[in-house]
Image (tube, rainbow over all chains, first blue to last red; front, top):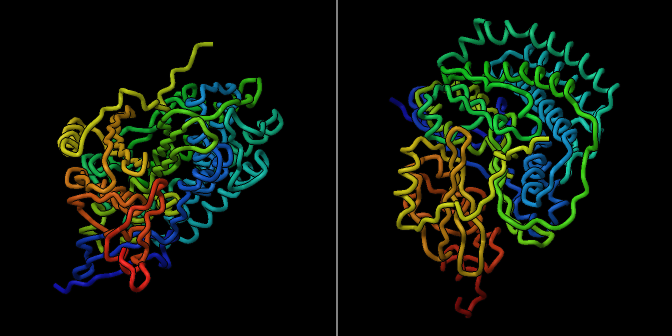
Length: 358
Length: 146
């Protein structure tokens, strides 16, 4: 059998992210996949040496544009615990609302790109058209579509009034209706299933061994979602992680599709239960201590290690993003698959390389 | 109002288990056998001589951490033979801090993020860990020894 080395990425027509894979291929079947990174490494963690702990909020928001508010939330909640700050309950609910809006627009973006990866361009356009409604909600409530900059140490810096809440609920009704119109195509279409069922499979044991996170882990049957830790207002939301068991690309798609609809339910609960009160508290002092903070970003578990020495600059800030955890599982998903399935498999982990490399 | 128990932020206090380079592979093997998922590693530059290496694990959202303080100049056993996923973060630590790992399953040789000609380790606050004597000699002006 002829053996060929195919360099895939960092620039590729179906790969929106700058990751490189060296694929060893024998007669169109991948036998080995070796990832390589480094195309968008910015060294953001080292900025903690020269930017103070308050300025670092703006830095961590820019680790990733799609899960921006969740990075800031993970960072600020870690510092709040370190500094003994209790934020108002209203602020926790507001954080939950913006977090779930991020989850929705991230998953809708992914559903579109995923459809595009196997050539379903009209489905890609439909999902991104719906996503625009969510971006409009971000802009109306926070002033910006992408990097919304709402989190501060001590709470949030913007509020959502009753009028806006009513408008968001009516938008969500419409958005849900539009998403459900695409459900049959995304989940039951013959061509979608042909390209995704049985493709890029990792078992439950492999997912745990390889450190997978988020929908990649849950699609392989592991019911783990960091929102069950109860940060922000998730302790009041009463949700269950969405789990599939087949561990293939189709299962990962189903998990994200269902999570998009679940996010709408959580948003409705959060808006209905939004308590009165302040949105932030004044914070005094400097961070001193060592903490680990975790949240569930759309792509999975985000991990922050924060060490403060009592000065205004942190001693160390370490960020592990979910895609960083989901790159090693690619080395198990790709072997045995056809070369034509490689873009679909890579997209199925929802890669965000700016997150991965920071 | 009932006080909320915080399970999403862990204070890294004395409960973090301390290990040594001699025991790290054995400890990680036991943790893996107990069903824990590898989350990541963290490195903290402590002083010109020492570096703090932390290992983070998770099982059903319950986190577990190990701490190992090592000398920067000494290589550390890689855990990628036990947990393959660790190869990526160990390579990142090699690039950022210059800490060498013995037995890396997939070794990028300090070029995961950095170009080959880069010899200084960008994340070291205390001193500079040089990659190898050859690179050092290449930097020194003619007639001078490193």
